[in-house]
Image 1 (cartoon, each protein chain N blue to C red):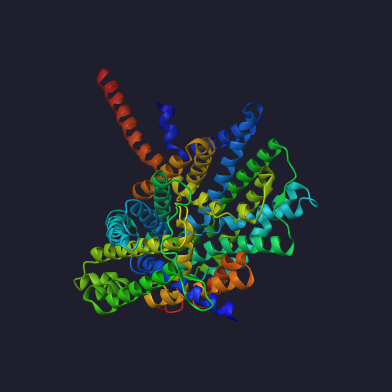
Image 2 (image 1 turned 60 degrees about the vertical axis):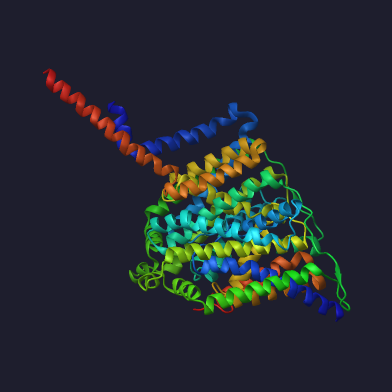
Length: 328
Length: 289
């Protein structure tokens, strides 16, 4: 009883413990998981995408539909550089390319407000995809790219490393002055500006930082795609996945999108093959229900349950103590 | 030269339907403040229902008489249940816009996959009135002309309704300042629901027109959302004439680029136009500051 209350009472350590357990589980998975490693890689990708999307859009309230652009950039950096550079360096290059690109995009677009920003970012993905498709097929007469195969276990560990880096980075950013500034922009941008926050700088910077992880994730995913072209790499689906994951898990917290991304990835890999129609239908329903009734996602359930459970436990303890008093 | 002229005529005719597509979305975004990603799914529903009705022996030209009210009811219901309670819960207008977009995402999947149970995932043979029209130098079909005529008539009707009628004035007041409009005695909740319903109705009718010209399937929704979104943004949110002009512009550009240059490039070209315009004039061609 005492242990339970202490665990529930100190949520931070519980979360840290769970995080370490999760990492340990993924790290040892190749020993007994076999071919299921692919499922795990997808889960990690979705978690990374959801966390980095929520870092920018969840806190500032600017709904970005551009993740696919950065993800695709990551895939393309592998396609273009795989003959010249070692894989892990390409992953870093993919992240940096996305950073630079996002910086440029952010500088021109982030003065657009609300809906216009969303429309622009959405247009960006389709624009880049089609433009690259045109250049490839007409200028280079090339139809897609084949990737050099990489060891699956190595990919899993790379992805795990990237996920850990992402989570830690997001954790520290959320606690920093930058994170506070972002939250105040999400609360009320005008007020934030009057408080002396350089809102444009904050928005552009976080937009760019969040895209690093998306680009790097795209680079790590690339070899397991085997083949890719502009349509696959810049598919708008990759913009929707992080949103689904983050909303499902809860955008307000750090662990929400992680959980949401992992769960969404797992469900998609295991259920979608047989239950494609019902799966997406169900996800649509869950999405609407979550937004309507659980504004903090399924992660929001934890504090809710905790306060209820905590109350029950406290009552039990009090009851126990009262009994003891009565006995003595 | 003759080809160019033919392409422009085709573009104008297609553009009229684009304009109709966008008008509904323009109302939903401009008045209800919902970036309705579901819009294309309503178009798809309209198109697929037209197919079902034609199987039952109902003329596609009469189908909108049933589809329109059906869509209106659906849109009305969505606004009064889903978006209204989202609005009540949202702490700020910006938060509402975000949440409404996310809810619309969920809805998009729901409508798309529910309709797959009925219409599967293949092309439905829905073309109607494919007779050639005798016109020197240009290959036109009757359905294109009828589509444009219906779209233009609806566009003019909606424009007159918004600018001349009492209800239209209430709608414009609500779009401009919901709080003040409410204080003046406008039942803003009803207005929002009406606008959302009207948007859905226009989408449904546009769906019928689309189905007359091309084969349709349950997968066409997303593309139509994309087109509507571009046209709305180009024309300016909430502006009916803007939507119509932008629709025709996009129609012409699509045809010219596809016919004279490269079909693959139509989408990049109009996204390029959109991006340049957003950066130069974020409120669109005829939008208010």
